[in-house]
Image 1 (cartoon, rainbow, N blue to C red):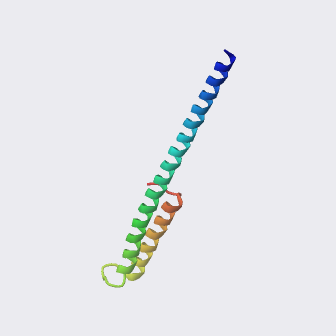
Image 2: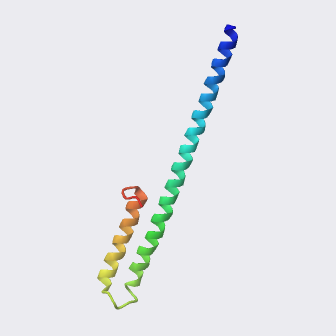
Image 3: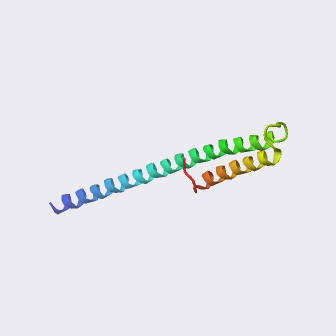
Length: 88
């Protein structure tokens, strides 16, 4: 009788350990996906900032200084998203 109780306890402990490991893996996977989404978003925003900066040399609507400033601000915004200071 005592042996059955011990075996059942061990089985419960194994199950709870397996569930804990599965939960940890699931959380790690979600964190990786979130980081990947953040990286892609910041990359796309950075590309927009680079394009705005490069447009300063070919357009005449806004002065080149203003265009470069706006482009750099957009690049900084992308960096803040990448580092996690700002979330979208």
